[in-house]
Image 1 (cartoon, rainbow, N blue to C red):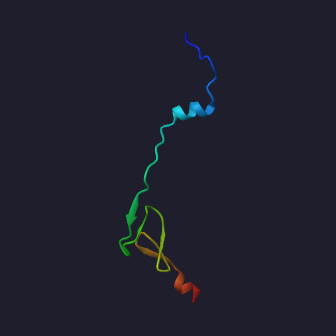
Image 2: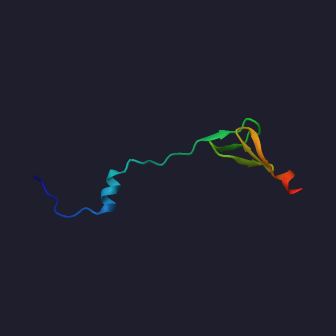
Image 3: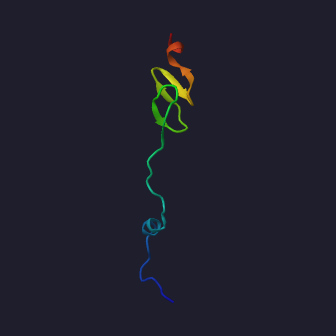
Amino acid sequence: MAHPKRKISRTRRDKRRTHYKATTPQIGTDPTTGESHLYHRAHWHEGKLYYRGQIVIDAVEEVA
């Protein structure tokens, strides 16, 4: 049976075993504002926080 001549380091071993690939994030457009944003994330547009096309926080009203 074959035996390795030298110990393989954890880094080298883990590099070989990895299958993760870099992927581009999915970007969607808000139906209300047309603003581009990451999926499943709220985003700010003109002082308002939008999520799924609805206003979650209106910073303009809170400050005044």
